[in-house]
Amino acid sequence: MNQKSPDRLTTAGNNRALLISLLEEINQTSREIKANLTRLSSEPRDDDPVGRDRQQHIRQMKDKQGHLKTERELVKHKLATLKEYHKAMNHVANNHTTQAQISYLDAFMASAIALLDEQQLDAIESMAANMIDSKAETEKR
Image 1 (cartoon, helix red, strand yellow):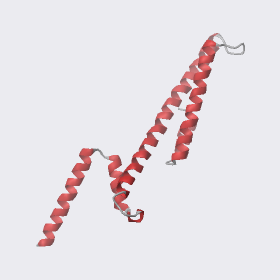
Image 2 (image 1 turned 90 degrees about the horizontal axis):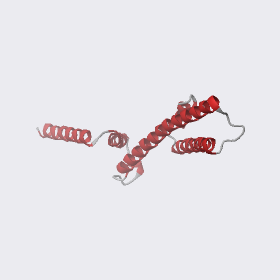
Image 3 (image 1 turned 180 degrees about the vertical axis):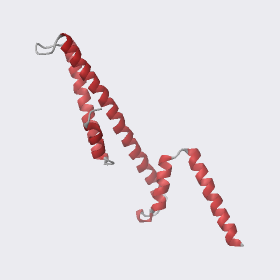
Image 4 (image 1 turned 60 degrees about the vertical axis):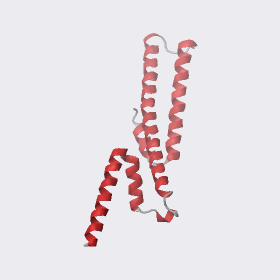
């Protein structure tokens, strides 16, 4: 990956619009490289490199294409993570009558839903139920 890639991804942060823009830029650059490779092999021009220089140029373009693919996967993963967070928050928000009722605990639950698998969530839910039952029994005494 080139030096600009981590910076661009970091700069985009959790901004969905910037991540989508970055993804489109990566896709456009990848399409341009693919078109240049196709043109170079099927319709060479007089000013195109030949021999060893041509092979080196092709290798550089293919390397760049590989880096773009890796960068694209990172951006797509980040977008998928943001979508999971958004989905979890919507799930929590839909259980409340107003947006103002969403609290830290709700955000914590949304994070847990987004990050943990089903088995881990079941274990947490079971432990929480045991804690509530234990507290209720203590209060009865």
